[in-house]
Length: 455
Image: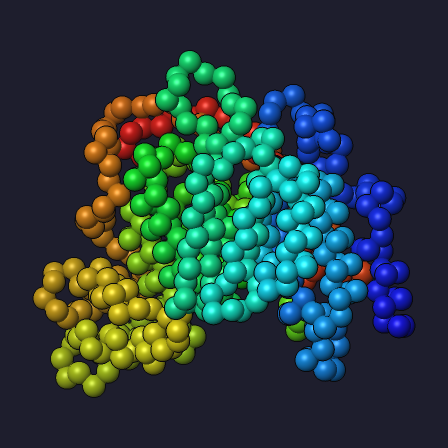
């Protein structure tokens, strides 16, 4: 009973009408009021919140006994999750993306669905594969957007991870225009990647491949894309660089004018006490010129290979010798290449490189196609460069040089992490709502001129 009493005295579990509301992100400035309007904002805007809410089955209550989890104490997990919903409804974002949602508990699921539903949200939940217990929940406010399509992406071979894809249309047009063909629609992805971060490269590649196919099949090349969730890796990782090469920007970093090399904020503290920034709302507008997807992925994969080689204290020449193994010639065979990747533990794990992915990397490196890599070709791996002569299925028939068209996109208006201390790289000891901070971003609609070639 002592533990329970102290739990309810925690300020994080005070009523939302308490004085701590002064620190609520966007309150009274840029979020919608209960009347559905944005206070202090003249133009219509879209808000998005992403939050890893820490499933009770993972929340440790006793550092001395790691088997004691919050899921065993109904009063604990129910109060904490009621509090989470209080915050979500108080902010009332247009889009809510939750990770580590405890889909395995029907009472908790019903509480979220009923409270969010009563406040005007359509909810979509997705469990991780193989009965892992947690999953994703995405909520779309019906007053502002309608869901045109919903897809589920299952990655059984990658740590039972999943992703949700929602094709959303604005109920009230953001922009008044004379061009009825200008789509005022958005593609939204909610996901939770693997740890360690770089092992998720294949998952992100699959997500972007699916997005590319969906956009091509539904003629959606001119719509903005948002990727939300817990990416389990920071701006230093290869997945971050991969997404940047595909035209995505971090909404929080854009709002605060941070560069890719700035590491001033954090959003997660793990059970070991380490803090890092892993939660993102990525935005890609349709006017972004991007590399072909296969090339960006191959360069990111080469970067991970180089990182592992350097981690083994190998310089460029030593790395070449390692890859060619016992080969008497001054070249690397495909068999040597695969064996080396296995030794680097890039293929032996369930979420490692697949056979086809290894083959694709080999094709990228073997420029002359003679079946072996000489030293010059090996340097394509070491310097993470690829040729751009890949046949991309995503090239649309209407990709024509010089033709431009008006499109709809977003500008990042603001973004805030809560608790606010994390924005300065500090994790507050009195924050117990989750082991992640909540990220909310506000976007204003903009008109874009896009060349058909970049679509």
